[in-house]
Image 1 (tube, rainbow, N blue to C red):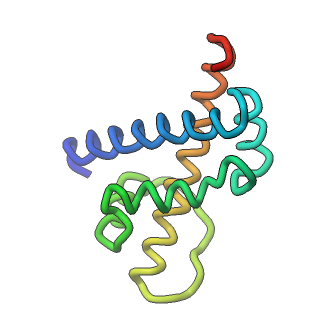
Image 2 (cartoon, one colour):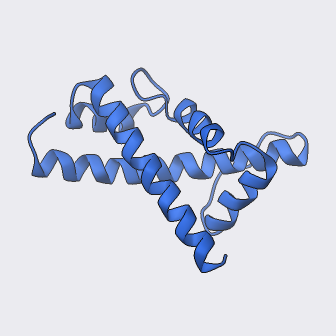
Length: 122
């Protein structure tokens, strides 16, 4: 991956983390509650990780095979479960969504831990 593409991906990830943390903190009623829900049920009430990632990728026009390739290129070393069988484009999109969602959850958990340790609840 070229340096400018890595910079674009890192910026995209930073935006996603910021928006996701703000969203789940608000919906769950604070940093600690958001962190607990994210860890116990990332697809559950108030968190909806995959739904957020799908909407986020759609908003940034990355919900297509080319966008999936961009994400997968940036995350080439990450491990994910095999996607459901289907067309190549669909499988690429599934893998990109899973890889991005897993990374987003990890980065959001880090941000929530830091926020809960260093500041008052919002």
